[in-house]
Image (cartoon, rainbow, N blue to C red; front, side):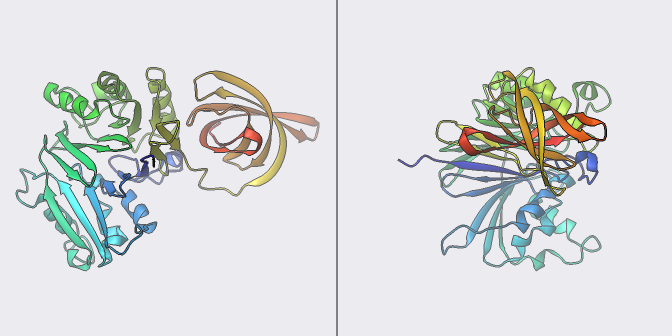
Amino acid sequence: MKIPIAKLSFWGVRGSTPTVDPATWRYGGNTPCLELIAPDGTQFILDCGTGLRMLGSRWAKPDGEQPAETHIMVTHYHWDHIQGVPFFAPLYAPDNEFHFYSFRSKYLGRDSLKQVFEAQMAMPYFPVDLSAMTATRKFKEVEGGESFHVGENKITARWLNHPQGCLGYRIETPAGVVVYATDNEPGNAELEKNLRELADGADIFINDAQYTPQQLATTRHGWGHSSWKEGVAAARDAGAKTLVLFHHDPDSTDRAVDTILRNARDEFDSVFAASEGMVITLGSPGDHVQAHLPGTRTAMRREAQFRALVSGVTEGGKPFEEETAVRDLALQGALITLEHAPRLQSELLVTMEAPGTDGKQTMRLRGYVVRIDAGEKGLSAVGVVFTD
């Protein structure tokens, strides 16, 4: 019997506004956009931030003669969740068909989503209007509390606590349950209940973690976002299996997100910080959830031969220390062969011996695991980005 597999890809993970700051390079600077391919082949897109352009540039139509039909769930109408639409190349191809879903805004009335798209491409804000998009576009209004089916998949929408309204989505597939609940702030009992109902038993629970608990309690109270601590509490209450921290603040550097991730992992076993290029597979044989992160995106690598001592934490949470050799080195990172398989996004301390003018020198580098591939003879090829 064929095992159902679903693939969740992260194309944009930043909140509020995109960033190009080198300090945010590792997690990524594009605003929210996710892609979910369900076991029956249905393609879902979650939000239309600037990550949508990246998805469009790598667009691949499914096999078969039928036109591609894609279902796009928009959580709300703030800029960071819609600003990728004018730059999404597949919307300009006549053989594509897109089904958009979102709510009727009390500020806009009927056809709110269509109005939003038309307005952001109207003069004088954009050089062409919506008529330039030749793909078929269909719009469906969704209410909080509503459930419906797309193919073999059940979608449930719930209201979340965010200024001007926001929907969270629960997508139940034969391979597992994915919950997308960005842009929600704790403090409203009814809407917090909605969040936990969405996340109930979810395999993947993607939750807003834009602010620190301290910011949420003071300067950012009322801005419509959450923290890692609230996400952990919701995941634990709802019995979610894996928590993904999402919607990183534009002022949060990679190191700040590292700290948020480390704090969350101290209180919940399975946590990831959303990263551009991250792919999570549901339904894999022997392991219901598998995550993969891309290797470093810049810097040419060079073959090297340095003895090294590596210490870190395994996937099972046990500390390890291992002698090895670094054979592939760049300014930003390295590829290291290990007997142990460290946890993705965990911290590694790499101590290397390198030749110097006065004999051997010792270099101590701190970094984070961004990739794990199967190597030769049962070893792991581990990609590391250095932070110190």
